[in-house]
Length: 113
Image (cartoon, rainbow, N blue to C red; front, side, top):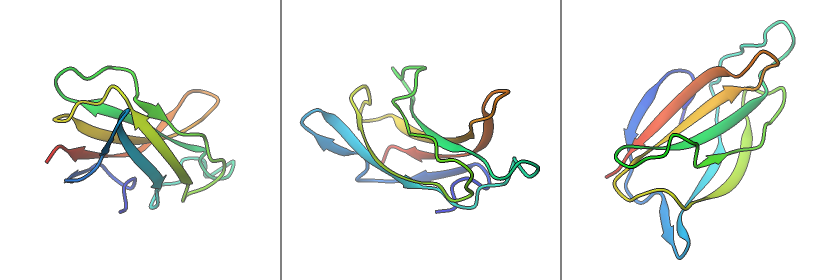
């Protein structure tokens, strides 16, 4: 999935996985990220996971660790989404952590099936 070269929308069925404590997703990584730090190197990437839809919180459900100086971050993080509700979409947004504030790199939205 080239999630971060542009805005993408998709539909997915069996994700997130329902477990006893709510739902769980595995955030593997991203590729195709544009280089916003072309003078100083490559972006320092992190991913925010948000629920979209009725009853969704404005706060992210999960924020990954920052992977420095890369165009292909591999987080391999499992996130428990306790506040996620079954019919909400999930939005994964990748950001570049900069001194002047985060720079948008791309997003993908997975609609509830």
